[in-house]
Image 1 (tube, one colour):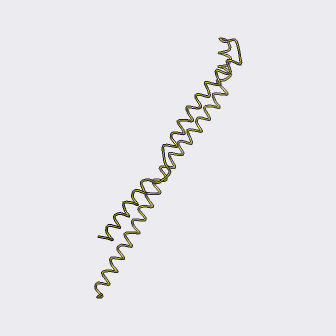
Image 2 (tube, one colour; image 1 turned 30 degrees about the vertical axis):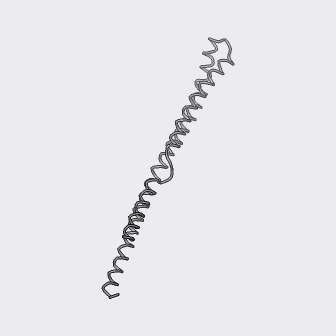
Image 3 (tube, helix red, strand yellow; image 1 turned 90 degrees about the vertical axis):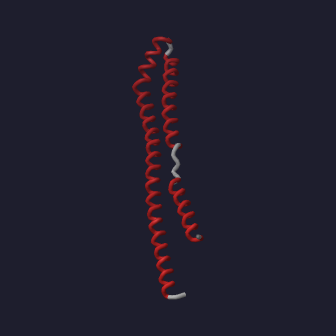
Length: 131
């Protein structure tokens, strides 16, 4: 192998290493961005659980007594009134929990875009090496 071919090979290897380093930096940036998006969505879902709990507690404190007394006027039984109000509040809290759970389960923490990009990059690199 001549000195010219050796220098050319070294240049190609150097270029390939720089390209791989640039690619790794870009993939890591994509990974960080995607993970930040996913964590943000999970945080919003968790916030929905917190809001559901706040509404449940506030409802229990402020409305339970008033509703029980109001229904007691109609049914003339405080315990039946309390049962009706408790069931209604439980349904509201259940709906809020389901909405929050759906928000959390709708997002995957797995960095799918990064994985797809890495597969594509691997395919391109293997094509360049073999071709």
